[in-house]
Length: 501
Image (cartoon, rainbow, N blue to C red; front, side):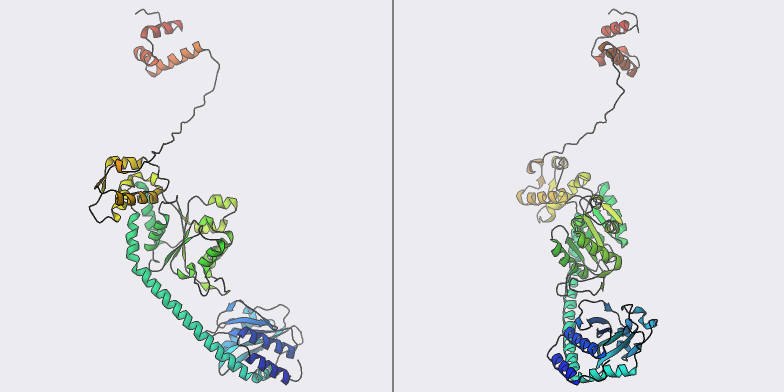
């Protein structure tokens, strides 16, 4: 350490600091000056916040951005901020330094609070790698002397930080108010959403089983993976699970993973300080990841981190934020293929696939077609309710419905506008190509052996008689020959005596 303080240097520093209202620049210049005065290994500066947390902002004159935020009282900076007293440690085994991250070569460290009119703006840390260097009260007085010459600069910075914090608190309150109003809108619209749930109806066995499982899953709080073709109602089922869960008073937000670019999806999910992301907005509620198999690998890694740690990082911040989210994911096909191809992270698949629910296609629940059709066609019809005839239902049931419920809904809504009759007959329906069921015939492979047509005929006649319990009249009819001809053939085989009719 230099024996005397460079007064002209500290005066110049004070002037420079008065011209800047950037705390990163402020702390960077202070550490640079202190390092030059003490001539030690490192001089660090931590910024202290109103809640007692601290953050590294300068290292040997270099500005540090986005470092980890230390909780109140954590580390040496947290201890000095809380006690408002300087502290030095000349031992690497000091228990107070157990939670302080620093280079292994550091032998001793001095930490002095930057105190301005009772407010701790931050802390100055001087680290030495010399084994014989022992910090003392004299070193504390040297740092305090430097800070005393920067009194006006500190006051200026204090006022700036107070104004900045007030603006930040005001902005935070505005955002909280906007979120509160948005939540009120969400809660107020719950009745409409519950009404929408009626579209998830059906009397088929497949739907009864699905709705029963839905009720059980809603009571738990683990992730759910919904598998089903397009238009089967996966998003509606996800909403139903949310509405029946303990999270029903919080938000349930859908994110279409396949409809956004990687950058847009990243922004949509994780957001920034100005544009809050979906995960943060839905905190305490549910996020529905539609077509999750189309999510880029980089986003998958970040979603997995949220699930594992319960922490969210905004795109413009390295400060973790605690979140409590339930993820419900939807896919058209099984994700196992994506995992095998390396396009979907295996660990994320297992995390999202804790409960797997298959959503049946419309062809698997044709018993519900009449019920669904009459619901859709009368949903916006204020006049007399329309009814489908049996012929119309048969025609609808014979169709394959590649677009599933969405296709049926669109067709019925068009009919509601175009058909004024109360009864909807098959003639009112558009041309629908009946589904041809593929009948799989099991091939029976028998051992082949060479034989003449005479031997083959004999074998076939004998098997026919065995099948009909020896009744020759029935056997002749089955073979398409007369009984006389049958007897003649049997005689030629040596099985019966000749018979003349």
